[in-house]
Length: 343
Image (cartoon, rainbow, N blue to C red):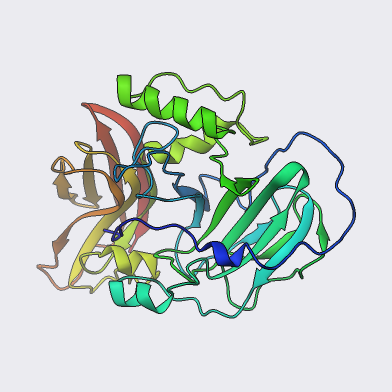
């Protein structure tokens, strides 16, 4: 399980104090955002965290879920693990206001790790000034990948760098912050007033209908919110019980015919309290392992479930092994994924 920290806001010093260097004047137009990462959403990248619109120590996001953490001021687009990356691109045209490209990629897994990035939580990143007081900030870029300079004009989709895990990052991702005249804006809600109104709705009836007329995304906002409601993002096989950090670091060893154990695992993000993850592993000679899963105790940013069996003979029978994972909520299967291993 990924550790969650307390109140935290990305350091303002990175986005303030560079000074806007003159560039090509920006034409007045409606401010719209495209994805800050060049990837296929839902396949090789996912939305891990959203803006926390609750000013208290509680966590609420635009969909009335808890897909974030206290004080989170942006939207996190993650890749699968530290062996993967993708281009980070400008979400809107503008002028580069500031950059940083000096911090190593290192997962923050403890309070000591967090202290070592104190004051530079954004890690390597880029700030872009747009028209009418809008500003975007891109954090946690891969060391040595930043391709733009202060004062440079960029178009929508211009490459800024690569997804990494520099600064305060427990997984590889780009954190996109959006500001209007210095004030944080949730891109799914578009204005501070909308955020306050949505907070009241979430607190009063638990969910309500989310209207997207003021969302800043060019893409379908509902589609971008899907990951916040819980998703299986990876399934696979291993030769031993699986830990979340092993999957994050792509350090899972696949089983061989003589492995001492054969394990099937599923990795999920943003699972809710009460969700169950059912697993079934079937080999050439029948069912090897099966579990309905215990109800999850509380919201989990990441969760890894596994089931398997120890080797009791000389080797595993040759043939196909099929693993199936099901995310179950309120008695209904809301997602099912399968993987096949050939031995």
